[in-house]
Length: 129
Length: 198
Image 1 (tube, one colour):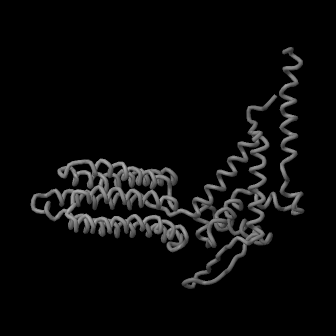
Image 2 (spheres, chains in turn brown, red):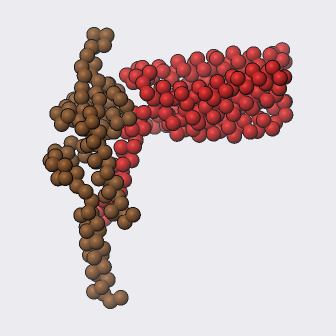
Image 3 (tube, chains in turn yellow, green):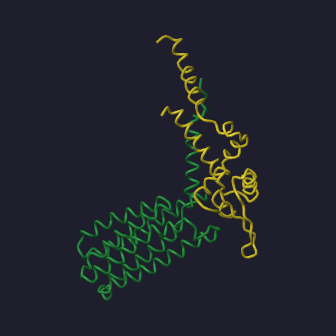
């Protein structure tokens, strides 16, 4: 193999990989939801949605313990997911203390599933399986 | 040329999948504290000493039954305490799954104890207890950490020795299981929890 072909081989491999990745279904554009990527991609929000996918409901304090985040940080992330209608929040009082219970909506579950499909598609495309 | 700091896109995606799985596991699992294992192990070791004592040896079955209830009670109290302190719900899906995994084999153990006792096969009781308790732990580990499955497997392995061992070694094997294995895994779980906090 001559020097020129050795130099172009990695470029061709990268081009082939880009072509494979181009076939990965997008999340934001295909679903006409421009905020989707940023909403679910963020680590704490992704964790909240994943946890609520396996538990019917979780309280604010349970989520705080699970992800080891501050009250302010958690409430900001939860509010964003609520605004996107990915979560519902029911507020009540238990022993005179405010209690917030979060549940994943069908829209939120669909968003998480789309995100999972996207991540799996990226892995498949890059590993060529 | 690829930068030394470049991260493969599929490794990032794989890490994301691992994070999702870890979040789901954490939300759906019961936190078993190491102190529960150590306390149950202490009860097991005391039962071994008591049942090996010359005056109490003939009452070994009664001694171990008392120890089983005592150890179970202490373990349950310690298991539910940190969860309530940390604000995790005690009666949610994970605890229900943990109990559903645990109880069928424990019930089987109780039935087999009665059968062995009525047939006079007392020598088979220690092996049966170790075997079915190990199976209970392996089943319950679906709603807990993997180390619980490892503890269950260790009990099962010890039960195979107990089922083949002579009568003179049965108390030692019961003590090694319900005392030694509980303490060992309690220590390992506690150390792991401490490392996570540091």
